[in-house]
Length: 71
Length: 260
Image (cartoon, rainbow over all chains, first blue to last red; front, side, top):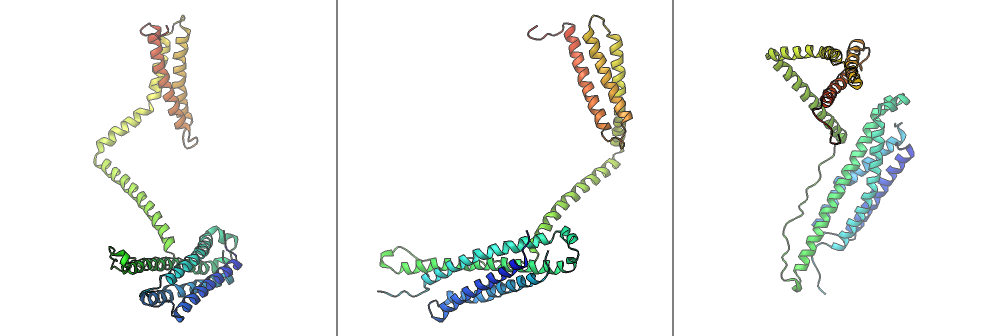
């Protein structure tokens, strides 16, 4: 079963929404000093390094697939 | 009221819960992209839309890369959640150990024991499929090497080949010899008072004759089933001859059925 251009765009949008929601949630915890300490620092660092960038990269690639003919 | 120093386990649990829920949505997206990528790799699809031949490699690579990104994100999220859950558990152990009601408990002093997941490379899963095919190919090569080794061994032992050839050549004459014996049996054992015995010998001769006809007339490759048919007829003929011998012995009174 193949994904349509629209489905690729929607998947990219879902990924961006998810990234924004979780990043906002973590930023809120950090800025309000609710979650601090080594565990929080490590979590924020891994979130930025391993997850955020890849999520946004995947969304960009799915957007590309939405405009490029895809079989 | 005492204040506990350490991580806020309630907030950390909230983060774990939130991430776990979002990761489930990612799984569905990754599966769809993976399915689209696998479908796109069907060469037949290019024949239906020839213009896409130019863009297909680009699209396939982008889709594979996106799928790999999502797989990596899911693996990293899973690792983060597991590590955080372990830290929450350890924090609780430590906090509880400070309580006078829990004198017997000593908290573990080890850190999170999980290791970060390895990166999943682009096309890595496709390469795993190729590895499986390569293993099957190795088995075929192994079989080929076995056949080559057997051929070499037979060349080094020509006597074995000579005997085999004689047996194979002799095998061709088995139906003719069988037919000859059947004809002799029919003539020698002819008994006008034992009609069924004559029929048995006649059927035996007919089966042997049919086997010869099949072997001679139905020559492969014109009729590939000729050899098979001949072999079957020969087998049935031999079985019939054995039955006939036993029946003859019965007629001669050498054995009888229990009800006789």
